[in-house]
Image 1 (cartoon, each protein chain N blue to C red):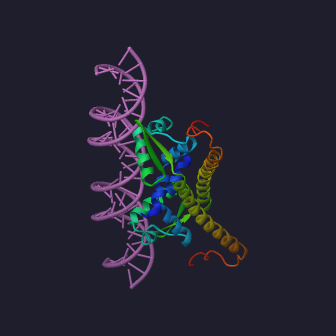
Image 2: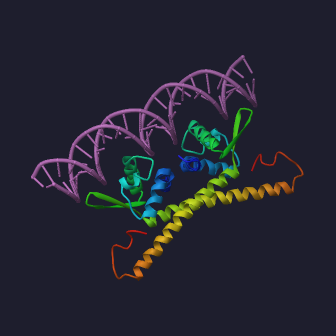
Image 3: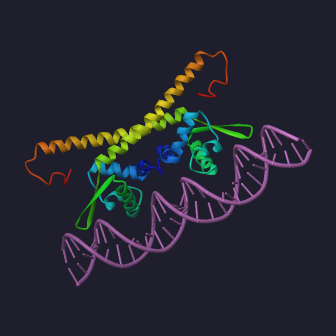
Length: 118
Length: 118
DNA sequence: CACCTTCTGCAACGTTTGGTTGCACATCAA
DNA sequence: TTGATGTGCAACCAAACGTTGCAGAAGGTG
């Protein structure tokens, strides 16, 4: 697994995505406060927070008995950039295929064997 | 798990992402041909192809003893759109936070309690 | 102080998922 | 027919996501 994949798989989990959404919209949150707005237990949320913290997407500040988590904006921006990169790569591939398909459509003299070898 | 999450988690796996890359760049491929270019066994690739097929990202056509897989462009485009959506949502959140931070910086008369409620 | 509530952390457990090995079956070519 | 190659199925292993249960630390109130 490459280094970049860590950010991906951190963001790949739907629960973690929703946690990031919540943290972004509310500024901060604890494992308990987040679990109240999610369909999973506090312990599950705590584990996810550990994962997010390990890849640097959130940071914790302990205040009394509470542990407040906050999103690391720079790291999230990096994750967003990676999403955009992959999306753009696939997009350009798709566009290229589309162009080739149109070319084949236009020059349709012989058929069937066009995509056998590259 | 929401319906949309299926596409996400299909694309969330690093091996599956590389498989999509390979299929896009080579047009098509079998479990065997893909496994030769990946650090996993043929059976692992076959399972991933099952997952990708279940969410409609690839389709198979059997020819003799070979089973060729191809990317479904429309579905992949949909996945790319989802990536872009989430990225854009987070991006706008980050920008908004940035603006608020700047506002606080400018009007720094009282301190500390500014982000308590929105 | 003692008592109770609340927030956290740790451990055990179950299920799903990504990966492996091993084997049986089908297909093509000599 | 024989041998190579491609596929499918089953058992197994490890990691990840989720659960329950319990112990401990921090706050509030009599």
